[in-house]
Amino acid sequence: MLVKLRTAKGLTQDEVAQSLSVSNKTVSKWENSASMPDLPMLMELSQYFGVTTDALLGISDGNGGIDEAVRSVLTGVDRKEQILRAFEMERAFFPAAAESDMFLHGLEAKSLEDAYPSDDMLLWRSQISASDFFKFTVASDAVNLSVTLLRNKENFAWLGARDKQDKIVKLFRFLSEEDVLSVLYFSHSTKCSRAFTADYISENSGISVERVSVILRSFCEVGDCRCMTAHLADGDVDVYECDGDGIILSLLSLAYNKMCGSTFYQYYNSDGCKMIGGK
Image (cartoon, rainbow, N blue to C red):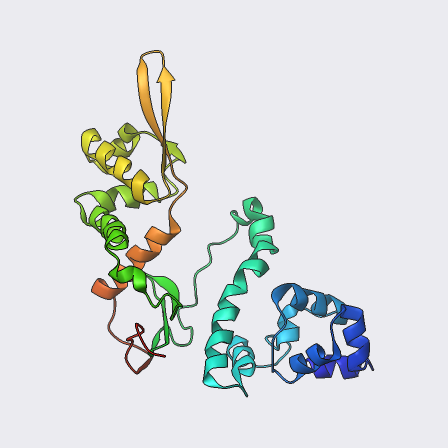
């Protein structure tokens, strides 16, 4: 697409390179799919050629959709580079989202219709497992989630370290305690105010104030929840503040899918998933 846009404007690689303050070699690599512009540069390229980033990537204007655009990025390179590019595309979401209407105009966006993946989307439940790459996606009425896992330089050493084990177990022990999921269910709903007391959660969950207080104090130790003391005329009151914990909600979604979700895959390719060790 980049070659097509450049030739349509009668520009040389050198002219494009000079305008964008990059080298000819860089432009050549982009055109040959040997490398991919980062998100800020993609936006600059789209402005330079007067097209949308979707058109630049071949996602719109009759060029086959997102899956084909992604496939084009992964074509012509070896397996290692494909894995790294796939992960880089996921990471590229953050700078792109930070400059999008989704975050810049978040308050206005809340009035829009909730975003759900299409019921008939391609590969609504899929998994790829290998010794150095794991990818799982699910799109259903119950769970919409995408997870990517790669090897790491520490070789998961933390999984064998006692102090790290204790902290990890602390989180799962908290989640496994009675009434915790019910408290998290309400505290993560839009019905729950940002700041609340144990009494408020108790009234809305049917769990005793004493039990809720214990749960919330534990939640502050493992999740995105803070406790402040309000000094009132009739005594001190603990006030909790929580906007929701996306990591915990993601963990619970994975757990639900593992234990309660469908076992049917539209795409499944497994070569094992023993990531610890290797080269």
